[in-house]
Image (tube, rainbow, N blue to C red):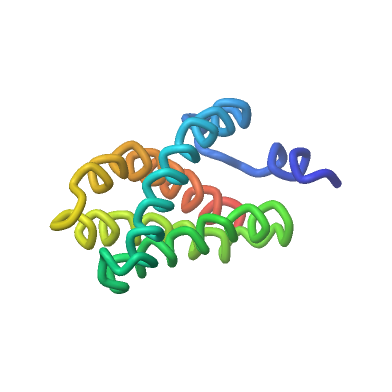
Length: 131
């Protein structure tokens, strides 16, 4: 079964956005993530930021990239929930780590955190009802 048919068959909260809306939100957020995370990684590579500052960004990036293969590829709803909680938890860690150095990077994470907070609530609901 194609993954979108599988996704459509899941019980989701009534307030879940349409897949096209979800895609649009990510298309807006991914450039922000690319620029801000890329900046952190470049500054860390250049030795202008301590490595510990880049750690939450790296963990977040790996967890974010793994979400769709876990959720849509493996169709492992509980593991996808664990993964998105990692994505969600590392965003405030990113903000705290970068704040003393580049506040604009911290502020740029706010829309990302808001969206991932909603996405996490959706995913946890999907897990609770479809487990």
